[in-house]
Image (cartoon, rainbow, N blue to C red):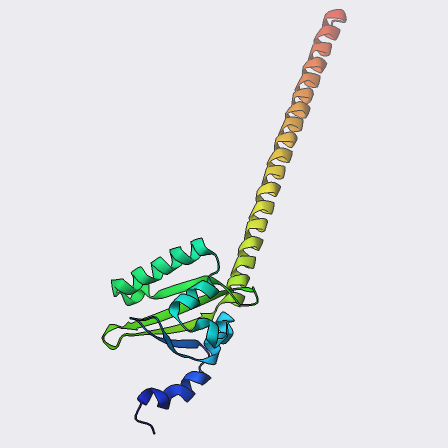
Length: 187
């Protein structure tokens, strides 16, 4: 056992199925990152040495990065733990691959520490997006088919009206023919 309790839990942190990082708040320096954190974000340790480097690399679009960074810092300053969850963040790996991640952070202001955890949600998010697309396509098909059926029903009603009208006219004509026959040839 060492005098530093953090050193005792490092082996456990390395085996976690989630990414884990420890940063100091005042200087934004990354003090510890487990391998899963690097695996999920897709960046080596030297590219995530500070919070600023993390934001710069993981969120390459400067407009999105500044917006998201402002949101994160506002959430941290709020002190509200419920605001320390960012779900399905679009991230970019060093190779340029687009992924999604959900981060849960805990601020320990008194210790000047930010604990960051992350899970890769790419597979779930992709499946949800695909399901949403299928649902939208299905809804479009149902809507199209409904319009087609409504048009066919209108055409059938029109044809029915024509046939019924024709039958009435034929009956009227037969009745009229009978009347004329009676006039021409009385019984």
